[in-house]
Structures are given as C-alpha cells and as structure tokens.
Image 1 (cartoon, helix red, strand yellow):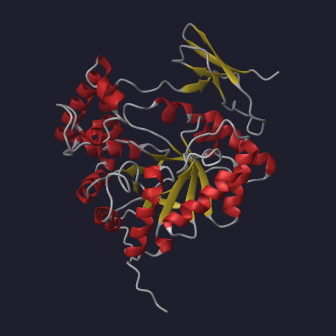
Image 2: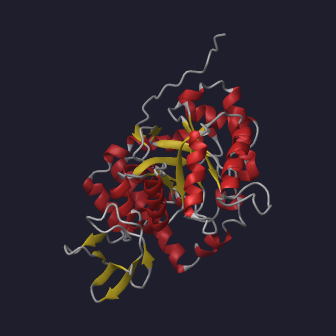
Length: 392
C-alpha cells in the first residue's frame, strides 16, 4: 500500500548537527511550552505546525509536563492528520515533571524514565522520539541509574538519543563520566534558557563541556518570553504571553517596574534602534539571529500562538549573516553583560575573572580528560578567582 505523504521541503532553512551526533536539526524549531495544548488547542495547533513545516521547520519539541500531557496529545494528533512522513521529522520530548502526583510519577528514577517514555509515546501516537530529554536533574536518584535508564530507552528503540535540560555543568560532567565508565550512551545536548539577558550559564558555565564533549544547545526563551520583541516597552498588551500567564510571570511583571526591569526595557529600545537603522529588521529578528549565531547553538526553539508569528520569526534567518563582528560589538556595547571567560593561567589552574563568591563547580582541568569527576573550589582574590581541585 502506497501512502501519499506530505513532502518536506527545507526551503531556505539551515541545518546543524545536534551536538556531537550525526542528527541534523533546523536552526529554528517549534516548541509547545505554554501554547500547544495549553492556550492553543484544536485547529489552530494544526495551522501553526503546518505553516512551520511549510517553511522548513521539521523539528518539534514538547514535554510530558506541558499542559499535563496535552501538548504531546495535540502534537501527535496534528502530525497524524497532516500525514507527515515520520523520517522527515525530528520529534523531541522531555521527562521529569510527570502528569500525575504519585511518588513515582515524577523525577528520573528508572521506573519513571521507562514508564514515562512509554506514556509519552502513547500520547504522541508514535513508536519513537528522536531525542528524549531529562527535563531537570534529579538529585534524589543516583546518576548511574539515570544514565542506565536512558541507555535502556535507546536500546529498546523508543528514542535515538538522550539529552539534558537545565542541568548544571557539574551534572553533565558526571553523566559523561558515568557513561564512559560503564560504556553507556552519554547525553548529546542541553536544552537551556539563553537570551540577551540570560547568559552566565549557557555562555560561561557550559564553556568547558562545550569544549570537552561538543554538546549543542536547544535554546528555549530566546526572546525572554517576549521582552526582546519590544512589545512590553510601553506596558503589558492584553494578548501577550505575560498577560495570558499572569500568575506564572508575576515576579517578572513586577520587576519590569523596578530599576532592573526598566534598565532592560531601555536596552531593548536601544537594540530596536540598532536593528531598524543598521539591519533593516525588527528587534525580534535581531534577538533570534543573535542566539542562532552562537557556535554552540544547535537549534532555537520558537514559541507561537499564531501561524503568522512563526513566519515572522523565521525572518531571522536572513539576519544571521548580517551579524558582523562590528554589529556584534555594538550589541555588546548596549547589553554590557558579557560573561567574563574562565581561562587557564598556564599552570593547570582555571581563572574565573569575575567570580565574587565561593562556589563549587565541576570543571575539567586542561589535560585531564579521563579523570573521575571531582569538585573544584572557587577562591576569590584581588583581580580574579582560582578554581582548584578539592579532591583529597
């Protein structure tokens, strides 16, 4: 029996490897957080996914915890109704928060990883997902159990790869160490928040694991939940994400009227002028292209409540090549928040030039690529901080 699938055409979309893997993902993908299955249900979900697919987006991201599983249900329904060839798609979901409140319905125990994967596939109506993410770290479960469970999921054919979301560099390092020691499959990517006002973790903390393991990021909230679109420069629009999810964003809304929030709005206004006068685009396109330009970004996950938002956001593709070193310097001059790099002092020590407190990190020292994971203490001194091995 021959099936007439809806053919995928990449159009002008660019594709990158997801971390160290051979999986190619579009620079811009589509996610379901807060929208698909939540504030957007039924035919509008189909229109959003259809328009995205028609414009070269073939990666769709969801999670068991998005709208208590309804996001997976809506996405799976639409994929079936639109008659897409499964091999044309990259489908990702995430486990941790669960859909119920039982003692084993959340977290990263072997039980929840295996049963949660099966339930997610059932809601999606799929035999497998391309990537399954650990949606948060679980400090109540041994890392060996977590890595073994995701390895099992992959060996069963329920996922091709596994990855992490909002894990610390130390967590990722530990997962790699366990995988190497037990000859298991390590994570290939990290789904992290990254935007012009949130840079420390994705640009600084993860720097050693980018270099050591070549992990890629699947970025969420690249527009700072809409702040970087400029729509909040003069108040809170009734149809905005902040208004639709007032309780979720109440702390953010409060901050917009305080010194820090007002300073951010002023920077968005300056970025808007730069985008319009020197790039001929909106500040939205500039913010998305800026994240996509980062060499560690594998894909930027877009959120949309309307099809036209997807089309408009994808105009950022044309802005990426316009981000010359000169333009990037002007962006940094406006933001004034570039993290100071962690560098080697030449004697095997790592220097954190802007650390102002003691903290414990998990960072591999240069030349020690196969040592067990150990903690490093950050000690502050005039002019910087030194990170040293605290292992006895």
